[in-house]
Length: 253
Image (tube, rainbow, N blue to C red):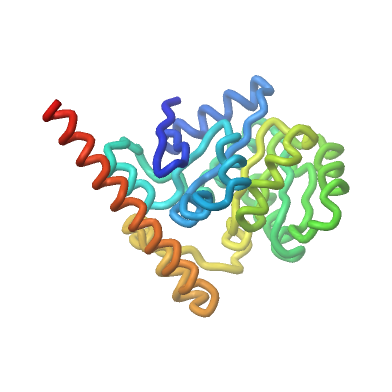
């Protein structure tokens, strides 16, 4: 596994298949793995959020989820092979757990949403052992939820709560979870449950998934994406110009 640094954030240069194989091997060997995906918003936010930045750096694998990050990294000469979308990786890992008989725990979202995800997962993967599940509204009772996860015997844990809470929750409690693998999956449960529609494939590939989200929830999303996208472009421009000057200096040296 090759790791690079992009705008003060570590990223691992892995394809989807490489990621699934690597995680599968680690789980089989009972090596604890803390996973995270990063997108434009997360990279922007960790510049000022030191706790989030530390939580991301603690991860054993950092996948790129977002075409903006893929293209930005490539612009700076970092050969990111492809986008590894969290929602797609979640599905691939459920398939792996189904095949290997690995118990999973689903944590996050509204109660009715996580219950629907359990139903969908059980229908799609009949042999999948679901060790337990819990909604995402537990900030005042983290210890009880962690204890439930530990008692469940789950090997894989998927956490669908908002950033940066999910990254920091995982990093804070990782030694007490008792699982082999933990991954934050953000809004994945809402997509799987059918509460939120996913952008068409052409928009995903074109890096326009954020625009689809704005169309779905304009009141909540437009300010967020305007802020993070503009800051990301400014950071990327500075890094690109700095890279040009370094290369020019190396040539003239």
